[in-house]
Image 1 (cartoon, rainbow, N blue to C red):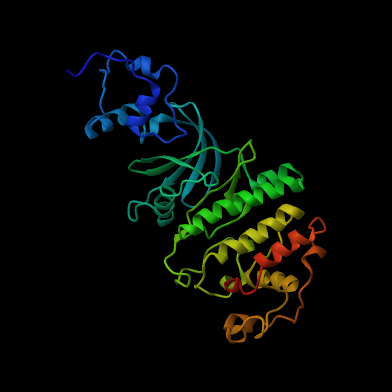
Image 2 (cartoon, rainbow, N blue to C red):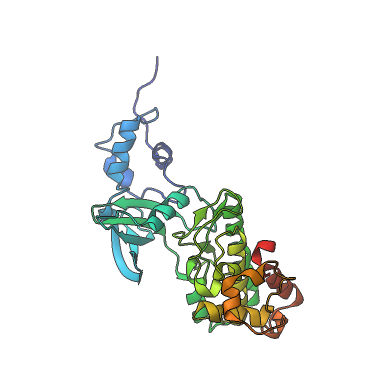
Length: 334
């Protein structure tokens, strides 16, 4: 005979049956509150009961989260620091405004579709999604600051050991993305988040794309100007993982020196900064460049490559060699 006697329900029982993410746990006292109203169970919850349980806990509900401070605002979204009433943990609430004519912006759809499948220690975790008539709110884990803020707090001088740790974590997160054929396409210090433990995580996948083949045609209107490779600046829409690696090289230099490597305000000026340090490309170094109408229209002087260590005295030979490999022209030759 099957023993139907009541047994004590543990937190682990509930977590397993609700399939909660590993970093979300029920708060102290939650089980006691349910003790009188929840019958004991000794078999997996049915799909219907699981839906009811999740509803009770509050996932997918705006009232589960309390807004604390506004962290930033963009064209489509506002980001708040918040707190979960369920876990008492801090969260980041990315509130995306929905236009009735257009629905959710494509950047939001893209970010959700990619992040739900990207689970890695160096990629920001998407905890929850809340859809209302006027907004789509993405609930992320909260990290204390971004790399730009970290640089500012350090007086633009990061300890070399920390630079190595951050660079390693950045490359580790990108490697995970690239193995899954995902390009970030918008790498910059503001999109690299850091917590108090020194863990660095990739964030803001609004411009990211899942790629199918290395030469698939995409829009060239991606990546903040300072971190954009020259072939994209010159109008190329055929690129692969190298678009991200160029950004890594620029960020690495910025961590070492405390200043951006190529701080152009226009496409023409951006290319000028690049060529002045890396050398003006020729038909020998960049086959087909002399046929590029945009390149010809700018009529750049003939610059020769300048050793990167001349601009970054803190770099040893190994670091300089790494930056040179990350910043090759054209990036598609990596």
